[in-house]
Amino acid sequence: MSCRFRPCIDLHQGKVKQIVGGTLRDDGPGPTENFVSDRSPGDFAKMFRGDDLRGGHVIKLGPGNDEAARQALAAWPGGMQLGGGIDASNASEWLEAGASHVIVTSWLFEDGVRLSEDRVRELADRVGAGRIVIDLSCRRHEDGWVVATNRWQTLTDLRVDAATLDRLAPFCDEFLIHAADVEGLCGGIDTGLVSLLGEWAGCPVTYAGGVASMEDLQLVDCLGKGRVDVTVGSALDIFGGSAIRYADLVAWNDRPD
Image 1 (cartoon, one colour):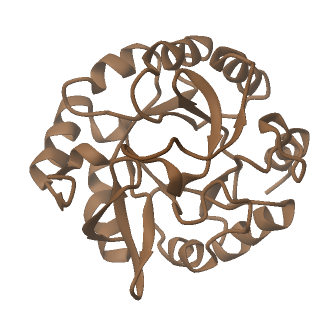
Image 2 (image 1 turned 45 degrees about the vertical axis):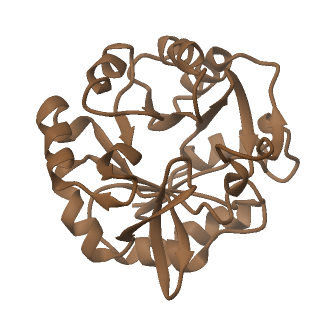
């Protein structure tokens, strides 16, 4: 078992962007943008398809991204997951549009704060646990991490720990966990969070946040004990970065276990 690179397409206002996670808010000034691409979402999806990079995610960061998301999914039906505004009423629609899985966070929390097990079960009953990725993107809080909803603006009452992963694993196929405090900063990974995820030996987990070098990938592989996959954003050359080459990540996935 070894860590794999998972590609991402983050959509904001219909464009492929890289955004500093902690700056994405409903009020005040717009988010801090590290990169805005002139290439279409479909172009990126076709590239990932050509390099057989499976299990990546398309994330809609706010409204105005449905058309862009559909374009990416149409470019690689069944090749990528889709998140952003998912609930029981629209999950099937996005699966039919070509998503391999739907990624859900905020809708699972009543009032954005309290986890609703009824909603967790409803979604699993509607589309099947095997088509669901539960996003437990989080922020540091006191002596651990808590899930943050509403584009990482609202802290919930749910801790990210082994007990939570055990509790939710029967209702999903994978977990996606952004470290929102380091997302988009290219300042290194949250080593404590990756270590916690590596100690848990359940369903697949993908970590995102702060990857700034190939050494960070190796660190995720080591601390995650090969159980934690990783996504790379702002440091990647195809997203305007200079620290990590896309070709090296394709080679990383092709290396022997």
